[in-house]
Image (tube, rainbow, N blue to C red; front, side, top):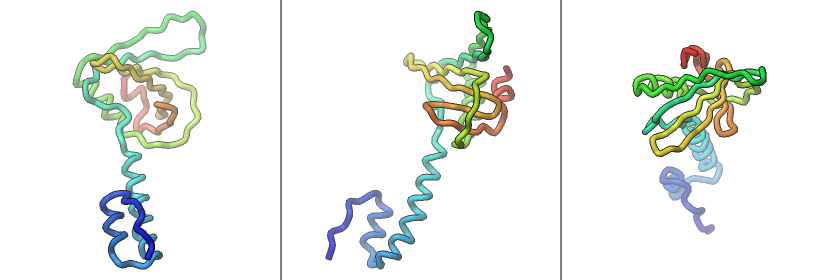
Length: 139
């Protein structure tokens, strides 16, 4: 009798101890792993807790152009923008950013989000937005 594997989580641990054949275990564990991967892709990009402001800047290829920055501090507006951004889905996309969103938290931490049309890049990963960034931020 072989020793049991280290417990991955409660569900796989229970399945391991039920007297199934190895093939039956694989059939049960693979969908559980795929389900857990799908659930982790739904994680929030921006934590809505304690967001102090979002500064929106338009990117341009013109040198020496002074760009207007819009700073949003209104809690309702911040909440609405964050909810729309967090509805995005992970997707490999190549794009050139037209908008930069700098999210500032109350503790001073800052995060930069690059956007173009309905594409978004955050922490090296790209996402597809449900709406255009212009529609989301109104700029």
